[in-house]
Length: 366
Ligand code: IPM
Ligand code: MN
Image (cartoon, rainbow, N blue to C red; front, side):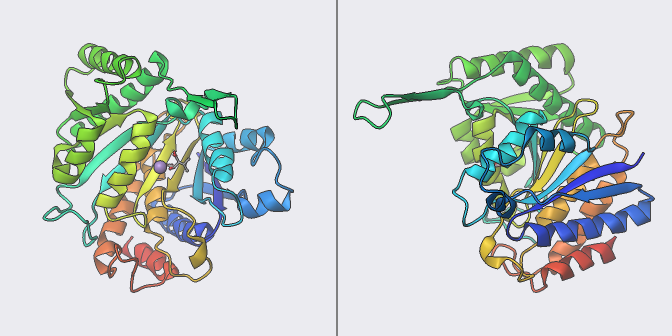
């Protein structure tokens, strides 16, 4: 089948890093005989302002069009002239919800030669996946104001957990843990992160679902549980404890930034907004921002965008439900790993190469 890819380069340095990801895609596709097509969309801050700042950054029709693609590759969103929140909510969160991308998959892997702020930890210690629920929790937008703007103002924001939402996320995480174990890439342990001692409703629902589903269908997978505050501590002190972590949306947002830092920062971290259901359209992205002040200078690190491409190939299913591009994705990841030791200091934001040279190095390594 032809893999139909929608490319959304986005704002700031998004187009520069996305160009390198597409360059690597072209190289791996030639080498592996992958049939693919790309179509570019210019959604982002500039277009939104040009169109007169419409209420919807991306319309229902445009979302339906994106839904017709197999997968989406996103660069970055965030524009210095657009109030924070508008593009994030109107483009990123809206797409996640509309396309029901209910998994946010965030590998936390320290690549060779990349600096981590953790003393005495190396690539063998920092190598796990976070599966974050991506459609519920505090992200539902449920709540409101009473007596807004008065001294008696009241605001509420509700945390929503559904058995359906928890269960589909947990099952995805159990399956991933099992897949990794069977491939010899993990010990087969899934850690639930929540706060059951305080979230006596939402946390309890997740914990019970975790236990029931694990007992019934995943007896081969070890289970562990951490409170969120303790998990923040262990991520720093003993990241080697983790194989796969599953976590509700808001806590997941926070610990995946912590994860990004211990793996060497935003220049390297990639993520997938995944709808794993048949026919679902997922979206892969470097998780760093659009770094507007570096726009057009060819200095920004494209590894996170290339990592997003690797993830896309590793996690995308074909029409028969097989991970048809997994080998290709693994090859891109291995090429990344062979290039990272050549870069100067990613933590300090110095590469010793330009954006496009780094893309070339990855292509050569392939
Ligand atoms: C992320 C981001 C988003 C989130 C923001 C931009 C709304 O931080 O992808 O983690 O909170 O999910
Ligand atoms: Mn975040």
